[in-house]
Length: 401
Image (cartoon, rainbow, N blue to C red; front, side, top):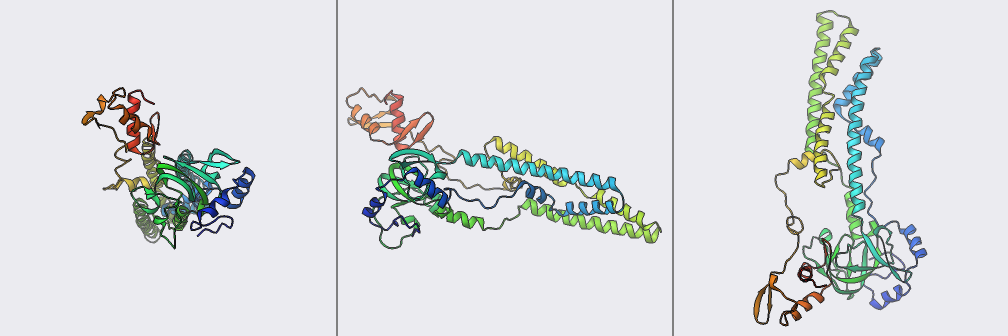
């Protein structure tokens, strides 16, 4: 299943796996493997440079006509008209480029803020490193609330459960174990494996990294996404159609006026042509693209204040056309928090607000509920199973640690 020559595959016996990891990774070895296999991160495909983004602003039918008009004006010796036309379309292109680059920078900053870290065994010590520095052969320690940074084979686990919905679509956390599997199994059935992109909801464990970056199962999905074609938004399609129709109408009118001036009014051909070009430049709404860009940028800034990053300005219009939003309730519309409301002890039901750790009937129940937990509460951050965090929160309210 895995092509790393120095690692056993998931089907191997546990004894063989333990034999391989008995010599822990040293930092020099990790550096060599990092150079060999690359950083543990997904490649988003080739990004456009600022120059490419700037030149892309001119790939519009109306803008191309304006550029053609500027060239004709220059050939006719009308340098002032050429400068004015080029100045307007250049300003529009600069505005569009600035907005696009700012949106991309905001998204990259958001990615850096959400970059996971990992606790690994290096030189016989447990150290915390950035997730991108994890290499095949590392032993990673997992606890409730941790993000899984790479694919790997579980070495040990204690009631470990992982949410793998982003990878397999399984809505409920998957309970993991270390037992070897027999025969080929589907991705969702590999319960002795953990996968990048999932996170631990309960328990703890350790796993041996077998794949990182684009070699992970999540990386395979990212590779497929890189090969998809970029489609235009409804706004872009509408503007393109409007621009072509308007341009054709303007060119037809200019051609008719040129013919009337030459054939009917017998004017000088050069003067008639310059008049037709001037009319085309005046009739084409060269500020259309800049106006649309400005309006969309207002939308992106307003959404950025609400912590929503829009990478492409045209996506604002697409989002505004949404009539139905389907959302997972837990963690989106609700906080995924539980609260203790009642206790049952000594043959009676007691309100949580009346809980008393000094009561000889309640104390064993409350103390057991507090101690039999892997959850942690630090300030406003709750890590662990919601039921356990609710029990710990109740104890903290009564001054118990």
